[in-house]
Length: 86
Image 1 (cartoon, rainbow, N blue to C red):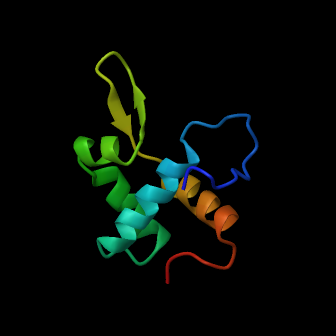
Image 2 (cartoon, rainbow, N blue to C red):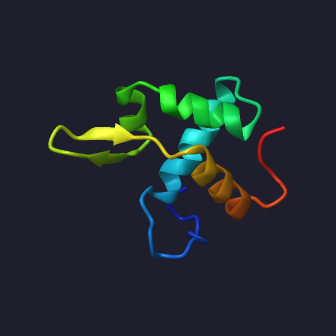
Image 3 (cartoon, helix red, strand yellow):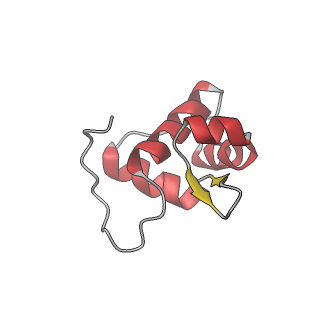
């Protein structure tokens, strides 16, 4: 997955492409069937799961931050146009 070309503009990138794709895929495997459900799963995912998926870390404690629903929607739409949740 690290070989996926990142179609996003370099300005304002906060989340690694691979991390966003892995979070979305994990949410779908957990039963999410819409971008809203994927975003909710990501927001409620435990820290250890986000860390394993390569989520961005912030602060002195290294808390993992999940990508938001709109970020997930944009990335999935750019990486696999026409694809995405049911």
